[in-house]
Amino acid sequence: MRRCAKFEKVSLKQFEKDYLNSFPDLSLENIDLIYQHIKLPKRATKGSAGYDFYAPFDIELQPHETIKVPTGIRCTMEDDIVLLMFPRSGLGFKYRLQLNNTVGVIDSDYHGSSNEGHIYVKITNDTNENLYLSIKEGEAFAQGIFVSFGITYDDEANALRDGGFGSTTNK
Image 1 (tube, helix red, strand yellow):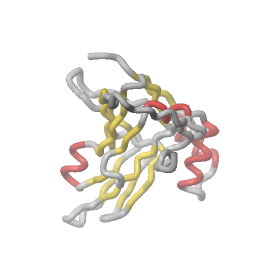
Image 2: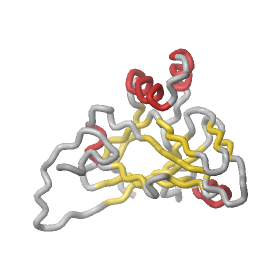
Image 3: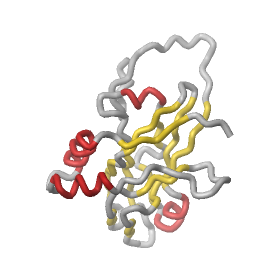
């Protein structure tokens, strides 16, 4: 297996800004404690393709409820690599946990964005069985898989990214 990337935490300042954007009622003391406990993604076994992303705080989702989770994680990767994000298999199977954009696509140049390449995961408990979902801090809830990709011979893309979630749409 080729080594092609490295996970890091975003800065505390960036995490505070992004967390307060999603949850404006939380105190800065709680944010600092959450930041200290953020775990970098890891594979569970030597045969795992996916890197588990761990909940930075307790997540409680009623049926059909959505939350945008600032993970506190960023990733540097080689230019020909993309990080694809999925819900953790067991949670998808049991609760129909879904990413709101179906599959998250983290491009290699996202790391250099003004938000430090902070990876968010927006999830919905899309249960058909009216099941309540509880994910505890430190539990795996999403997974990222690194994939190599190619480009066409006549590709001339040269725009620079600054942000995520549609930041390249108008370039």
